[in-house]
Length: 325
Image (cartoon, rainbow, N blue to C red; front, side):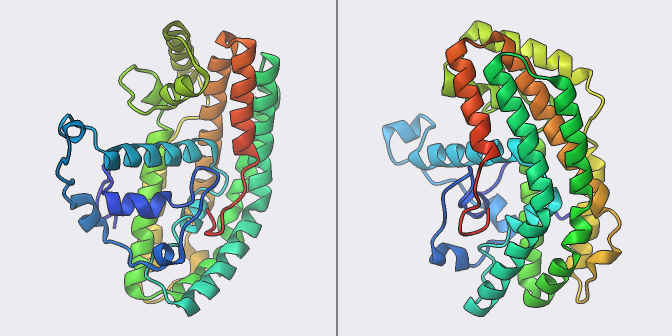
């Protein structure tokens, strides 16, 4: 562990298990929730379906379009929600593990407990997003307020690992060895998607296919000139950011968690990497999204500011779906 690097090329079966119920809404059917989880290697190696139409032959299939939309929604979620760090990735990975009805009932209780323990960090994240939304709407983001809110979010997220330790220990006892492996694979996949969505360089070049700026441009009707100004401003500001993300820290925690959780015995309290890794994810994710909207705000029209503020508030006020995402 770590078994493989996804590099954002997720197989369709695994992508489905990651995106069910994401994008601050949606849901999944019981059949989908209880379907056996594909192995990571099998999903990543799954061949693409053959084109079945002239449109498909040109490189765009309905399935590919749906996959692109699902991945875009998942990335949008991971750009705005960081509060639980790896604990959040675990909670989002508890479906489609091939569990029995008895296991499902126990897992639902554990997932609810995990989210309850993450609530302080969730509230701190909501405050960050609310401050950003108010700033966008007003045409000026108060950086001092944002920085102070991010510090509170980081502190709250640092305590999440210890808070859910007992829940993780119980989860280990509920799952079979194969189910534990499947869970770790999904957590790793979520981490890779999160990292890609929050990479510093993602919106600094025109080639960032499916990036945050491209998505926002479609949602609020940004002009090419506006996009270029935002891209340049974001590149400058993110380069000066005090907080930068060290991928190695996340990889180290994932490796430690994976090896421990897949073993026959497990005690989450022995993992010392969880608190710092969760705090780092929350602080960097919030910092990046703040710099992004700080770059966006000055070039928007009043109507666009209203639309962007509404988008941020939608994320700030998201409600968990029945399957816990």
